[in-house]
Length: 308
Image 1 (tube, one colour):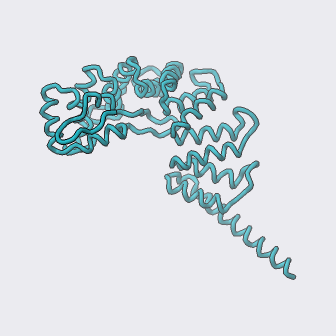
Image 2 (cartoon, helix red, strand yellow; image 1 turned 90 degrees about the vertical axis):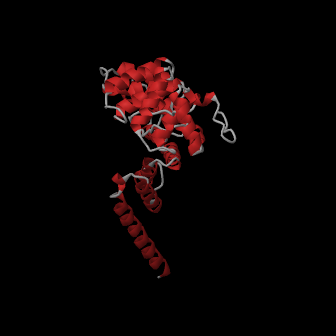
Image 3 (cartoon, helix red, strand yellow; image 1 turned 60 degrees about the horizontal axis):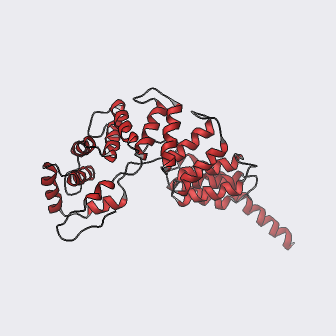
């Protein structure tokens, strides 16, 4: 990644290698279309004058300036936020062969951001970028095949493109491929492959994959049920800010067969889960409070008996 120059200098031309992180509609995980932190940070640090200069250069066909404007309009950096303007500049880059911009155009068409929503157009742009080796587009194309959006539903094609992207290190594709292996969609059921790909995704910081890996260990997908190992992965997911990591930790402390019950710990974890958006577990708070009160009464009674 190039570094920010001084004064009024713009970034070097390798800024075109930036820009777009992986994105796919969620199968089990929530992924968002975000510019890579370094590229976005560089553009965010441009002055208003530099953005104005980029506008002039982009109008003359300068590719780096087109990329700057695409992100600037998408994020509202020194210009009014405008998906339509952003899409205009991404399209110019896409038509000149940028697979990152082609993937971004696919996302815009899938979401209907700045363009009329069209899964068919999304599929065409994802296909172009995927054929150029863009792992984010490969994952996104797989998602369209999985759901039959803009293309005929085809689980085999979904699995194929998820695997291509997964082998390039795309964490969302790894998570989704693992799910297909766990369910036997487009591939034969293979729990060991599911565990492998969930682990690869979780190692890259995918909190939902860590939850899924914990569930696999809990059910004994790769051997006997292993609740302590499941708990470790749920805790990893929680550390990554995934609400279902907290709630699954709490569930094992409440109902686990291999984990000592600890309703006070579960209560705190449930509060964390709710704070991170997992409202489904709110009714469990009352169950924990009942058990904590029962435990307190038993301790008081035992102490009274011991002092008689």
